[in-house]
Length: 289
Image (cartoon, rainbow, N blue to C red; front, side, top):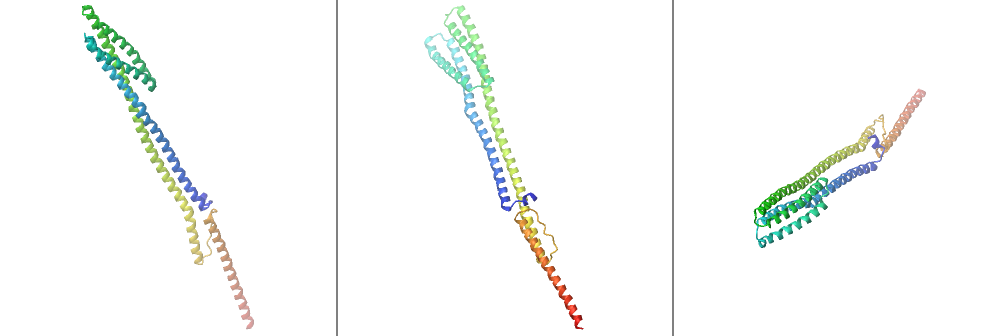
């Protein structure tokens, strides 16, 4: 109150407006920063993470489909019937190689890299086991060829299970990352909402407190001046005109005090004159007796 009374009313109003505007700007800037973070995370989830998850599922599907095709080819004895499946196996293998290269670009986390390396190592053994199984299938109808084919098929199936297991771990990892990104976005949205509400409440309370202090600093002196004016109008010149600050209200109180002092001097002079007149009249009356 005393601090504000040292400022003129115009400066006080400007200060209050500037403070409210500053709080609004700070709140808006913070919200903008948080929204930019949320937007970046959302882009990562919808673009980068979506691509990684899709590649993981696609790679896993290629493995399962090609493993079944290779098993079917191993059971066929007619090369003509097996050729369409071999062509599809070749195309799927080429597609898996493209997926593998793309995955190496978009997946850069240590755990993701480790799974990729494991997949690459298992894929190499898978291709070797598939070639061995295909060669064993063309070894004739002898018992030795049948045994070799059975052993090659068993080894291939074991590699397939391992290959699918590693690919499942990749799919699970990418799905977990997508879920974590979604939770992070939801958490960021919630935190931003809470902070915005808190900032709004703080700004409102601060504005109310500032407005209350500003109102008291203006209305209080004006009311005091009104009471003093009413008192003087009623003929009471004994009151003390207290001046606080240097603003317009304080200047008004100072002027009022000066007027009161002037009126007090005039009243004293009138009273003194009346007393002198009464004394003179008394002396004249005595002289006439």
